Length: 70
Image (tube, rainbow, N blue to C red; front, side, top):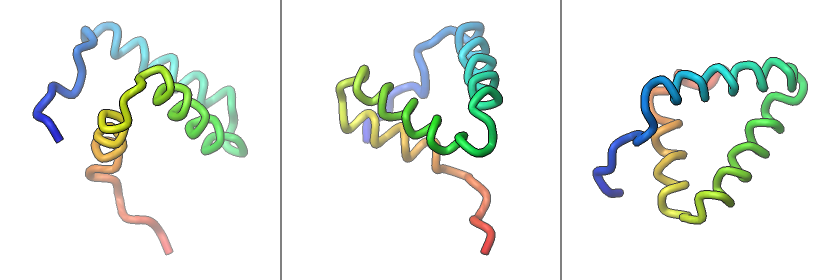
């Protein structure tokens, strides 16, 4: 993994992206949230076109998640 900045997107744009994502998750609803997020991730991976960067993004997203409930 390289030491690249977490984002090159200006904060205001990142904030807008967060709001769009939150609204889209709400629109998908609890029953389709995981499917929506999977489809979104795959669409973004395809647009990104870089498997290593995509894997790095997965690692960043997994970091510091609470433990799964049993």
